[in-house]
Length: 64
Image 1: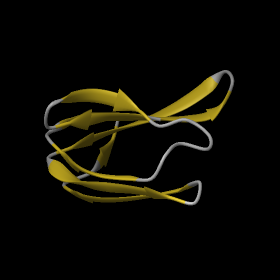
Image 2 (image 1 turned 60 degrees about the vertical axis):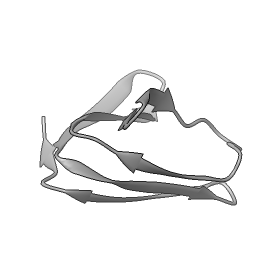
Image 3 (image 1 turned 120 degrees about the vertical axis):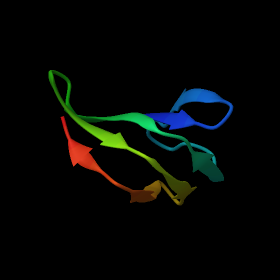
Image 4 (image 1 turned 180 degrees about the vertical axis):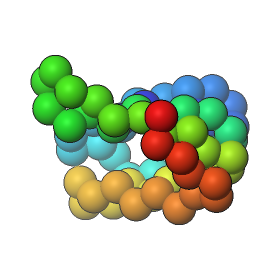
């Protein structure tokens, strides 16, 4: 998963360390499997990673 953080883009991988971050407008990339991805354009939001679970709260998400 790739996210547009307010201080730059970053990735979240399996067993990522816990974190909370603000998101700016941009594109979220969700890797469904090794060869397929889904993209969303967002206006802003937040992401939380805890115990290998990702929660994303965003404003204005649209599939691309």
